[in-house]
Structure formats: structure tokens, C-alpha cells
Length: 286
Image 1 (cartoon, rainbow, N blue to C red):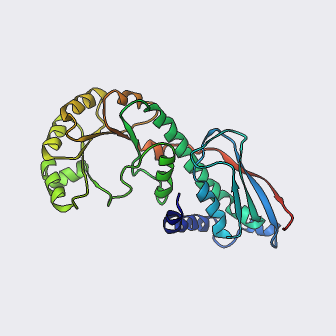
Image 2: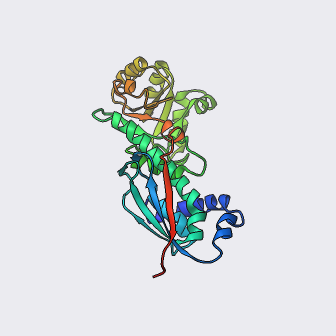
Image 3: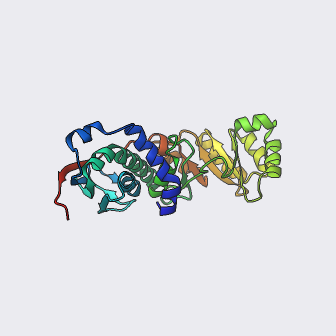
């Protein structure tokens, strides 16, 4: 994650997470360490997977004390194994203790998403279908979770509601029809915005195609229906499959020929990667 993104978008969110954990003081740390003592702690991997969020991990400690130093032995996107030493953090022991859980929460969550995404994206290798995430992210964690998807080998769908037009069932219902919704969107939106329409059957697919949709999302359709929809569209619009897509069922989608498959499970169902800070000890001052 680049420095500008970190400073403008991430720092405030990391501070909010720290403030959630330290409302007035870390009474446990302050009880056992009354004054500055320089210390060192090791970041240990306890489960094999894909590491992600190392910059956020380090930044968490730096926001508590800019003098904190983090030495990393791996990079985001690297495969890691149980028992591996991933890095070390050196600084005020009180800072190491106070920031430990928040830093690990970010790193474990992001690494879990990257690990799960890598698993799913590997299943798509050799096909034309590309993997996308969704907006089904943890509130205030989107910037971290979508970054983790990219590190894991996926791509990002819309980041937010300003990024593109996606006309779903309720938009269509409000407009009165797919044709009317697309026409209104075409008139209103900047010309650089693509228009995507969610459809649930072949009749809706035909209407979206005739209305001039740029992307047609095949929502909760059977593999047979998706195959027919792709044939019907015939390359006149991009196709996206969505609806309860997981690592367990994605193989049935590959054969349909869709251009993209979006999966909310990448962010809402990925388990964390087990990581730990261990062997905290004082060190001699330089």
C-alpha cells in the first residue's frame, strides 16, 4: 500500500481502531512498565497462507510512537508457513504492548482475505474468467480488505457508489423497467461511467442487452442459464456472474464462459490467518 493512500485513507482508520482499544490508557502495560524501556518482539506465523497488510501492521505502532522500528523479512503477497519468523518490532515496550492486538487484527484479517482470494483465483487459472470482489466489506475496513483481494490475485469491483452504475432489482423497480433505468442512467451519468445491469433470467438479459447495457450481471442463475445468457449476449456486452460464489462452487461457473465472477465471500467469509507477536524482551539502548 503506497504512502499517499496510507496517509490520506488509512491513518485515520488505524487511529480509530487504536482509540477503540485504548479509551484512556493501557492499564495493563502501564502497571508493569512505568517508564520507557526499549524492547523487541517477534512476528511469528502460526498458519500457512499469504501474508498481507505488513505496512498497516507497522504503521499501527508508528502512530503510537514514530520512533518504533519494524523490520520485515517478507513482503505482501508472499506465501508464509507455520513457524516462520516474519519480522521484528523494536521500540518502547509500552507501545509494543498497547498496539499488539490492533496491529495483529489488521494483519490477520488482511492476510486471511489474501489467502482465501489466492485459493479462489488459482482455481480460475487457464480460463477467461477474472475474479472480482464486492462491496460486502466490513464497515470502515474496505480500503484494507479490497487491497487484500488484489494482493491475493483478485481484482476490485466498484470501490463505492460513485465508481460506476450498477442497476439492481430495486433500481429497476423504481425506474419502471430495465429500458427506462438504462436510458435514465445514460442521460444522467458522466460519459466515462459504464452501466451494469443485474438480471435474473434470460428475458431480463435480452432487455438489458437491447437497452445498451455495457455489463450484464447474471445474478443467481444456474450454470445452464448462464451458458445460454453468454451465448445470447455474444460479446455485445461484458458478462459477470454473481450470487453465493465460493471456493466450493466456483468450478461450475468457469465452463459458462462469463468474463467476470464476483464473490462477496472473499471479504465476508475469509477466516483470519493465525499470526502472533512473541518473545517480547527488553534490549540495551544504543
